[in-house]
Length: 296
Image (cartoon, rainbow, N blue to C red; front, side, top):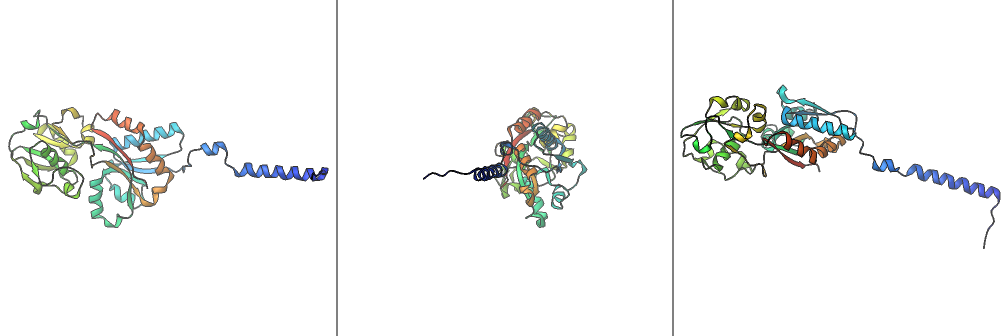
């Protein structure tokens, strides 16, 4: 059976069809919307960071974000101001910090248990390679018996120095390797089981271990500190391994910020091949990429 519609009926049907089409167009996302990048708030993401290399890397990320037009805005506050970077994040003065490795953070949390459930890591980024340097000797084997060696005065880095000497066959410790375990990060002078060359260890602040290098027999120096003091990594008597190094620097933030679009975008940049290339190209082997997103 067929029907013939009158003019008024056809007009009503056309109007209804047009209205339905408009409704469909307005409710469906456009191609531009489908291809759009996630919306990022205009307010800057505040990060308290060590000037070199962490601050440098963050400024490079800002350059990438500007070139991409992603909308990410970072404000880097350099840690030369000497403030407690974890307290700044815990109290909400900044959104994140990039100043520390995991063992240091663990020791800080042990002393500040009230922050345990608030502070979390969003990403690892790099390792400052730790090494033994000397302006007087060309080889570890040349260091004479009874020599005084400058070592870190903070427990979070002291094990790195002692493990380097153990790897060189110059000490025997109660733990076999620098594996990041609680036993490994607790290594200190009391953990020395054999010291055949009777080395004497002088606990010394981080910056002074580099500045004193011309005047001492040997000194253990952090990679970033060596870099900023004009020391050539090729001159190191011994360097710790970069492979599976437990001392990767971490981006630390507050738990409620893990869903912040700015943080997510920052973590994407930090884990990119471009940032890895930037680290490899600029830090002469003192600093190596150790990138891993820790976002849930």
